[in-house]
Image (cartoon, rainbow, N blue to C red; front, top):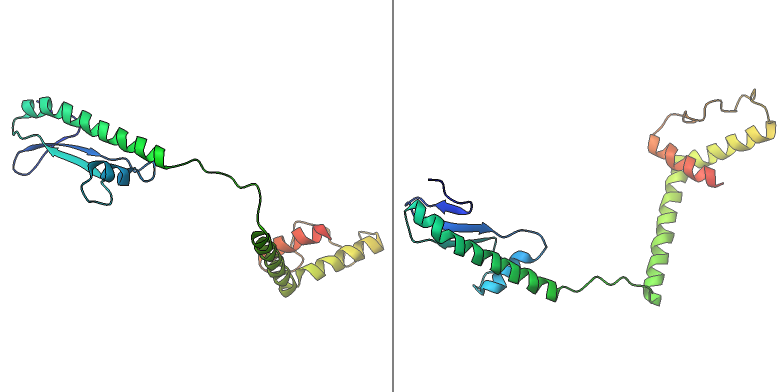
Amino acid sequence: MRVLMGVIKDRHGTYYARKTVPATPRGLRAAVALELDNGKAVQSHLKKSLGTKDVRDANVRAKPVLAEFDRIIAKAKARLAATTGPVVKRTNLNDTEIKRVAEWVYATALKEDEALRFSGRLELRRSYKTESFASNSLGSSRARHNEDQPIVGGHGRWYEQASSYADLC
């Protein structure tokens, strides 16, 4: 005869009912440990001996034990839902937070500007644009015929950054 799902046999032949506590929602395993009040921080499995070595008796005894495990997990989910409040989105910032956000934006802009100036791409791109507009002819020696090609060899990331900033100019 086959055993039910959740019924396992140990090395001595005794049957146990075992159920894994789901990892989601977050904190459920800790809530199950609180529900059992067993002193553990988290409870990843629920396990109870069925007290028999006979498979038929194990299947009969396992049903109420597995139902009890389901009740324990349901109580833990209810406890978790009661203690976890909804996430409230903030609609305003205080002066210190506004100052920190502004400093972060400014520092990021300086870092990107320094990267562009260090690579030299931005100035080169500007000179090509001004010459091509000034000469107004495609025959100019410095005019670019294929915009998909980088101006000179180098790292592709530098070219992408420079082209995005040159479009702003």
